Length: 464
Ligand SMILES: *Cc1c(COP(=O)(O)O)cnc(C)c1O
Image (cartoon, rainbow, N blue to C red; front, top):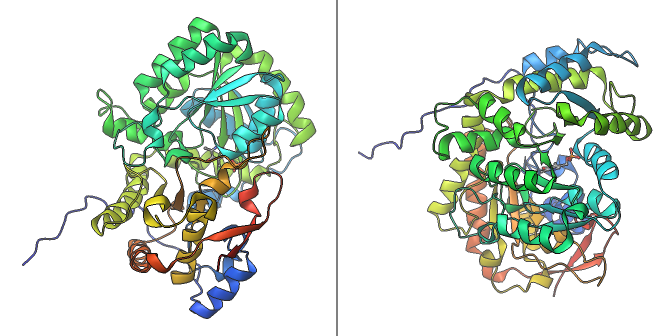
């Protein structure tokens, strides 16, 4: 008899409420896909079976968080939920000052407007769509300084989110430290496949920035997940708690922007947080937030949303939670590897990234292989994924040409605490079915292109 492969964890929760799923026919999906212009962002959620579009705001809240909603203090000013959130941010992230925002991009907007002047350069460990756009809208130019390994989907380097210190140093030498308002450092780099940055690297970046008098602004969106990777992969951190690792990471920064819709297990919310020495920047942010988001003690959120986020922080730092969350992604990834599907390695923290260039090698990049693959997976199974390739990369604002990113990926993103292991099995089987028919798959052409963040609303037609 074959021995069962041991898995040392199960979901660290049980199910109290269920949401029913709709199963569609292939004909219905074909119709829905055409109507959506072959863009999975334009599908109606009710036509989707397993929704792996994003892990943003799609988390399942706990009974503890739902109970917190009832304790929402909806006062216009000075809500007690704000003070609770502030306390949790201080306790776990170590930032003194908190400016709540409706979600992550609200915080990115504030910090970009305050710190970036036209003509500035903002280096970062790979771009994120909204982050880069806010940097550009403020007049800055984003410069990618992530290590080369991050652009190689076959490299198994354990910290592909690391910054190339040489690239950072070269940039500062070339443009001068005065033109670099801050280094934008993301934890578990989304666009690189959910790859972590090491503590050692972060410490070195801090030292280099200190020498030049340059700030570090963390994108803390998935920092808890990064902390978990450090704990299991980096020497010297096995005995530390997630909270300790998180606190150390933040101590190497001056401020952070946060999308609570990821790590913090809520459906909406975000914040800008700043260290004690950044009181001046905090005061500017507090002035600006009133213009764009709402009063500085709610920033576009209801009191109940702030309470849910505060409680989410407490649950998200739990190692059991992170083990199961990252373990679930790993489980699907291992399954796909086992049947020979090309995916980005190492398996990331929040998602599996199918390598569309290797999956559909007969398609040129301008035929949108990743967009095509996401559409085919939906057609096959009702599973919704998203493109992370040439469509997401957008166009160069000077030349008007497509950016041609090295990575042409389809992201299967796992919402936290939402799907079971059986959903994971079905997902792997669906990808396998598309892979078996890959040679007959035709590409797409773009027939509508919006000006900003085009991947959200672009429309396509099937090539003949
Ligand atoms: C989602 C995300 C953001 C933006 O946050 P929103 O809440 O969607 O506005 C910024 N950075 C990263 C890494 C993200 O994943």
